[in-house]
Length: 299
Image: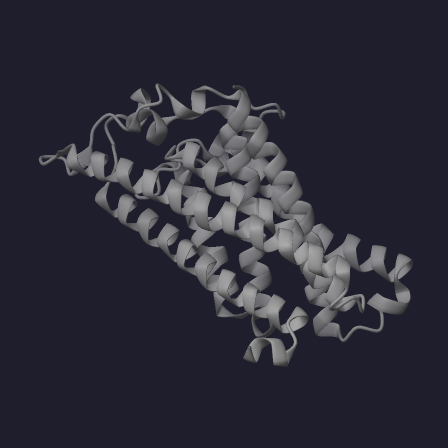
């Protein structure tokens, strides 16, 4: 399936060529670097320009009276809301219509499968997580180490897709974001003075259900699948070269899968899974705090 967007300008593509060399070997990055930078610019613009002006104009009594730190968080949540809806729509469209990304549907196909549309989706995701990492560093006091670790791990995983590597699983893991709109709505309702309202209760129920299904059930299931495929790749190691043959495209067959790549991917993805379980527990605590009375908790 082809990339539906215009091709990368030659100058920009040539500037990214050094990243196609070892040790990074991001072979397909020159084809999608313009999309990555566009996504980063889009989300940075929403964060710093569009969101502050939009809500200062339409919700002045709410937005302008918030402390500066909370206004920054508001703009970050707006950016996250736009991103989650956009990237999930793109990922679902590609998963449902693109047969190339799974190759021959074997473990090798899932690891090596690549298409222009999948690469575009990876680029938009990488652009967002690059912005997310910058936002977490700049606003570290309000975002915290957990958000930064999540952003860095997600950025590492999405950038690995440009080797190309595990693009199918990259698309699958993007569907974590299906729960994000409800998480943001929950946060906005607090700031709009609707804490404990029926709307927040209903949204909270949907949020917990979506978070559990998308991040815990789906995420754990797909993590098991990719760990199994990675194990098969490692089992097929060629001892003389230290790489797994046949799990990258024919054009890059000489490089294969370095052990370090599998290790970094597993470490980053495992961290994301652990954070998801931790946040799910914190989420249930937050909902209980808002809707369960103290005497009911004791019972």
